[in-house]
Image (cartoon, rainbow, N blue to C red):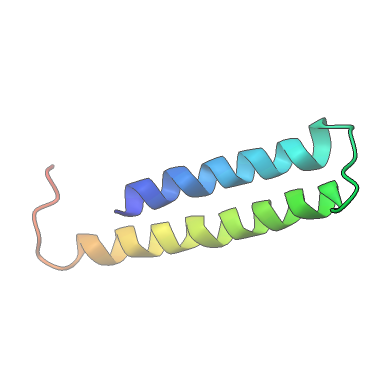
Length: 66
C-alpha cells in the first residue's frame, strides 16, 4: 500500500511542477501556478506519509520478502 501511495505522490509532485514551471497558458477560473504549488505540497505530504508507513511496516515482525 505504501508503494502505491509513493507512486501517486511522485506523480502529483511531477504534474504540479509541470503546471507551475513548464506550462504557459492561463485558465480563467483558476490560478495555474497556485494549483501546481498545491499539488506539489500535497505530493510531498503524501510522500512523507508513504515513507512513514513503510518504516512502520518493516518493524512489525511481518516478513519483508528480502
